[in-house]
Amino acid sequence: MLKAIVCGGGTGGHIYPALAIAEQLRADGARVLYMGAGDSTEQKLAADAGFAFRGVECCGLHKRSPRLIADLLRNYRGSRQARRIISEYGPEIVIGTGGYAEAPVIKAAQGLGIPTVLHEQNAYPGLANRRLSRKAQAVCLTFAAAAPYFPHADRLHETGLPVRRQVLEADREAAWEYFEISPDEQGTPTLLITGGSLGAASLNRAAAEAYPALLAAGVRVIHLCGRKNYHEMKAAAPQHPRLILLPYLDEMQHALALADLAVGRAGASFSAETLCLGLPTVLIPYPYAANDYQRFNARAMAEGGASVVIEDDALNGDVLTRTVLELLNDPERLQAMGESAKAMARYDAARDIAAVAYGLI
Image (tube, rainbow, N blue to C red; front, side, top):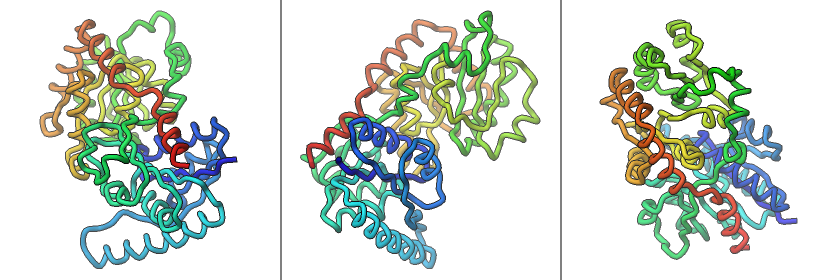
């Protein structure tokens, strides 16, 4: 039986692609170990998906000492832990999807001479992947625009971003049942607003300002506002049957399947999921993302015709309302954006990444 290690974490943008790859490897008959930070989100999600998990010490790097020195020491200890775990497990391949939880594992595997594959989610690559790519046997890309940032052009593979099967198999009828939408309400246009598990303050403010106009226009609003903001948002939100306000949604496939239009940040996982479902999007890039990678992602989506982009400093309730209603009231444009999204989607990304790994083995 083939043995593989998948690693990556810190945020859902790194974890969900790793899980999608792990699911593909498992479906192909491989034995898969997930590695990441101990007592972390990736540990919980990996366990929920039925994968064995081993944690190591790791953290993101601060830019100044003495914190930087402490961070480097912690990651060094994590690499030593990872080296022991990998030596005991004996994998034929190690695949990383980015984030600080990837670095100690990939570095240890490379030190042991085990082939490594990296997946880069964004149009502008993260620091960990740029550094680790120097010794990686292959780098899989979501966007072709990321290619110039890697040193070995002959090791690059444009695969797209792997999306979880639950999302690929999302079904609107199941979503109606999940949200308890009655048959007479199933034709209501639905807007999904999401800022991820942590929420997005500027997006939450604009959404709250837009609620009255959107609801008055007959729109159903599903707003995932983030766990830390939920109680404050709930207390101030209007009580309306067409407003579904939630802190977060693990079963994200239902919200995506129900939506006619989605508003969110330009993270790679959210973008890839909407592309695969042919869901038009309004993207608000997070302006403080490392290397401004979300603006690169949003630009690629907009140039492909799948998205409209609003800059964060231009966002408010009026702008959001106007943009959303213009799109929802233009079915032909929405349909064209949906078709463009499908054209950009890579439905076999997990399978293609697994094929790259098998080729190295």
